[in-house]
Length: 79
Image (cartoon, rainbow, N blue to C red; front, side, top):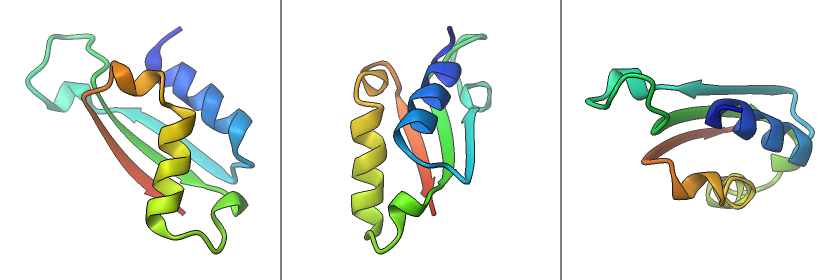
């Protein structure tokens, strides 16, 4: 299973997602073909209601803590 699929699965299980998109943006960086090092996550969830931005990011980072050991960059859009 790819890092993208694993991340999508974990996030969809952890949060009541209204929208979830995990994009592998590694191809836009100077990395080897097929790399999984740069990701962008856009996630909309009622779990984020009344939560400050830093709290929302921490919630996602906690869910993906194992994946973050292998990811170089993670852009988060938590709504």
